[in-house]
Image (cartoon, rainbow, N blue to C red):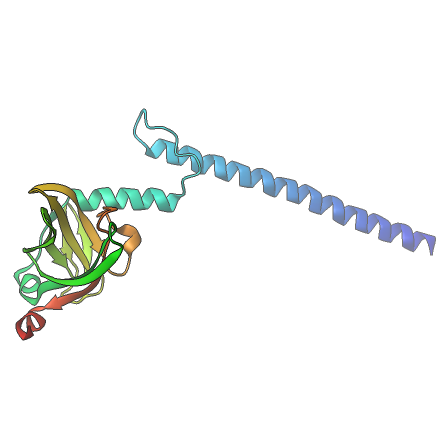
Length: 193
């Protein structure tokens, strides 16, 4: 009986020791992984750039994606341009905390306030980055995005992309006139109006 109790005690003590050792090893590995990730993030930043600290990889990817979108040429086929003629944007005026849904023809501008205009430069129904340009993978609204330019007294104050399905990737940021892409409009929809 005493031998059985001693054996159980040793078995339990051994199991606790194993769990403790493996738990410590797991913490060391987690710390090592975090350190490697931090080094990789720092290596990805340009020389002289301040450390990114606790910034997540997702945030870094979003920032990198936003930069790419504003620097690439938009190249759309004649079929895409012919089908997608207008967009509907939900535009908020932060000063009055009011919003309105506005339909804008691609290539045109709408006046938001005296001296302030919003121009729709391009609409891409299935946004994709290929080589050095932005294009549409298809002629269907699978990943719709609109390139907008906010002008004040004929000077550009904000320009960038607004995505319907993935607003976290928007490169257009203006606190005075935030907006959402509500829906694209086709040539048929434009003719009905």
